[in-house]
Length: 216
Image (cartoon, rainbow, N blue to C red):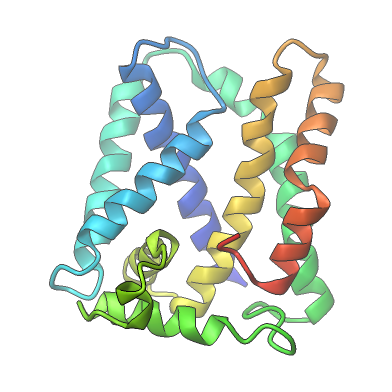
């Protein structure tokens, strides 16, 4: 459980920090919830670019840590964190919602193994990435950005690939409603939070999450 939530927290912090720094560099001087998808996209691209370097993912973990540190330093003193902290109720509720499949299963780990055995291939692809190998999914052009993030999480937090995938799944479910907050900026806070959660935790997201099909 601790490994899963540690991985989820790491992805959320990295995505929000890196994404907001990039948005600030583009000239926006206030907090933007678009930082969540922007940062996650950059995180996936950075990990993909570095994951096959020597060290079984160690370089990816170091590069991400440096980027997060630089982002936080750059954002220091810009007065944008107060608005960012207003998202904590949405974050807490979304994290609880993301935890429900694990609560129902009675354990943290691979979900949906009775009808969705795809995770075996994802674990194999992540392990191949960590060792600099080119597996079948890579040759087929399969999108392996998420797998690269998991490899970096595994090396940086020493939690294993399974917990890395679980943590990434939780993080995505949390970042989705945080992103939706941007669409309801002018609404009263309670309505805004409820609408963001409804958008972010829509049935399609919940059903794919229950299947363990994080990639969708």
